[in-house]
Image 1 (tube, rainbow, N blue to C red):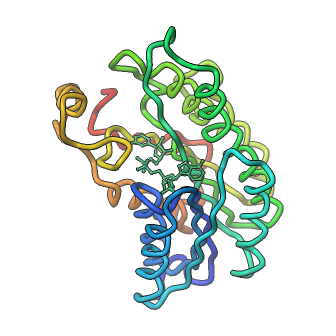
Image 2 (cartoon, rainbow, N blue to C red):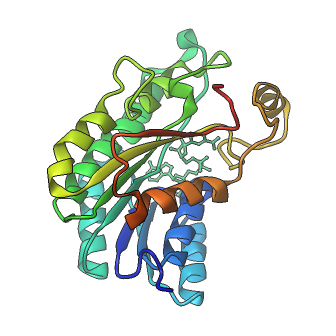
Image 3 (tube, protein in one colour):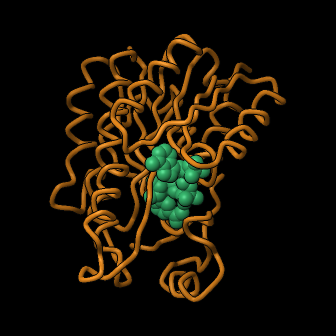
Length: 254
Ligand SMILES: NC(=O)c1ccc[n+]([C@@H]2O[C@H](COP(=O)([O-])OP(=O)(O)OC[C@H]3O[C@@H](n4cnc5c(N)ncnc54)[C@H](OP(=O)(O)O)[C@@H]3O)[C@@H](O)[C@H]2O)c1
């Protein structure tokens, strides 16, 4: 049987580590050629590219800070110029800073907004210039925008809440885009992971123990589990799914 994404090209922002690396590997496994961006881990990014190439796939690592508008535009152009087209954008790159509101600096606030919101907007706007029928925009949001179980996450929740389709006052980007892009056959969906074991959110320690206590299954998720959901949304099978907000959170918000 043919691979579901054969002939497609995907761009995964923040694909050097964690969720993004697992997503890049999974989309390549499904047959897509994959470009991935990174900022500070060239070696990790190269390892992902090498793993894809060793398995017979095609991949490209691009240093591109999602906070920099021109750099993001260039990353999209480089993807299309090198891999020939663009069918799937996964807006995964994200940063998290946890601090109480009275200790949150303006610089840090600006950085979270630039990466988690502006970077998503620019990548999406640029990517859709190249997408046609069957295009896919997949956001990696967070359950934090629906439920904040601990203090210190207000700004992170604010920025991740810009993407979901529900549960937040300014939760309209995915929903609005789904309406904008449906006439062109492009779907737009948001994934809301709960606690997933990555550098951003290690599965051991006091913080992790607290989170495990409030999930239904009592464990952290693995990046591969989120990548499986991305794989489904990217596939032709998911053509009827758009404007959706899909939780993969171990019952965190149940
Ligand atoms: N882990 C969780 O529990 C969890 C839960 C819900 C949602 N999420 C979301 O899932 C996404 C990935 O999280 P993660 O846990 O995999 O994080 P991570 O382990 O910290 O990895 C972050 C990835 O994003 C890249 N990145 C960071 N800042 C960037 C920037 N300014 N421009 C481009 N790339 C950048 C990093 O590249 P470098 O290697 O070059 O630094 C790395 O590849 C984020 O959007 C996060 O908010 C995570």
